[in-house]
Length: 300
Image 1 (cartoon, one colour):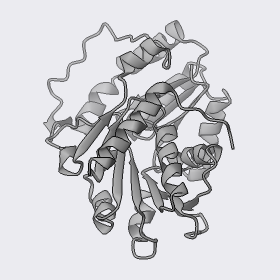
Image 2 (cartoon, helix red, strand yellow):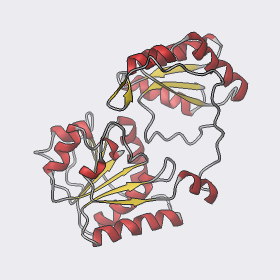
Image 3 (cartoon, one colour):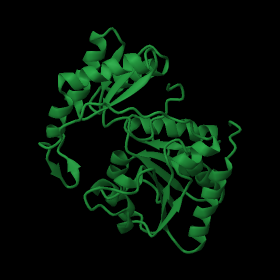
């Protein structure tokens, strides 16, 4: 067990969650920015529930997040089972980390929890998530996210009755808990007039055509060489085709780069991520894969 200590704002966040529970709220949304330590805070809460004889399920939507959460829980001294494809079932343990998809398929065999913790809970209105929370309506539900405001008319208030907020990104930077960052934007104006909008979001195919323009991709590579040469970088792309094009452009410029997405073989994907962590790959291109909860301590 690693000696993990909560920061003052993390203690206050948990105190605020307890206050909402004592006030009678059973469905609480916890909002904290990227880097605030949401897994540490929820793990701390889960350990308290576990020590009081409760059963807990922490569910996530990607395999990489299972591995990261499992490591954090182990560091916190939380013995746990994993409900996901490829893992041996051990329902006797009171704490489980689950893949949303696998959990939804095993609803009738998994022991009922006293507490459900939903990671990246802005996804919670999706049908699979609804099946889970509707199965165990009597359980406490804590959802955590950095982005509670959604586009397209989606309202998290349809699920949660209360919200607890951690300090903002700016406040955490001022406290010294997050590093300052520099934001660069291209001088060339993107023409998005022909990109359609559906349900509050840009249509993926239309946006991909604009963002895949050779000038724009070339601009990305040249600015990386100018501003961050030799440093590790993650490139967030519109879709798989766009991500592959950008990876190819970096490789053509002599810079180690790889693409991966949700359909990439799990072993291959794990190796790519590990090579990126070790610095063997400088540019990690992805399509909607590493935007949430992806932890790379050596990121530059």
